[in-house]
Image (cartoon, rainbow, N blue to C red):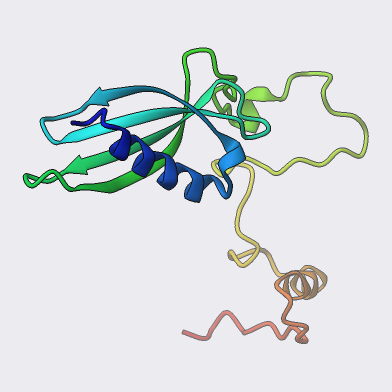
Length: 148
């Protein structure tokens, strides 16, 4: 029943809708039985950039034989081109990768950094710069240290 032409056409129609066109959904490859009434139909994908990927359409069949679509997704096939595992930038940058004038963000746990609003020695010029960095555009007035 899961491999009936009407169920395959229902699954193909759902894949066509998700793909925004029938030209991106190829031949029916197989059907996998996930449960007694839950089946996943696999179709070839012809989306540009998704060579060897497949449309997976999960169909549930009710007791009376009526079928309904549960999910439509694009999944990689066994030979699909996949992106490499993500590596944080601080582990990717090697000596020699940076040149004069290159700027990278600092690590969040860099012990050399303190927030700009932390208690710093009295320096009016530094206070003015800090206020401008926050975008407040206010004139800095140092509060006497005797205030609570």
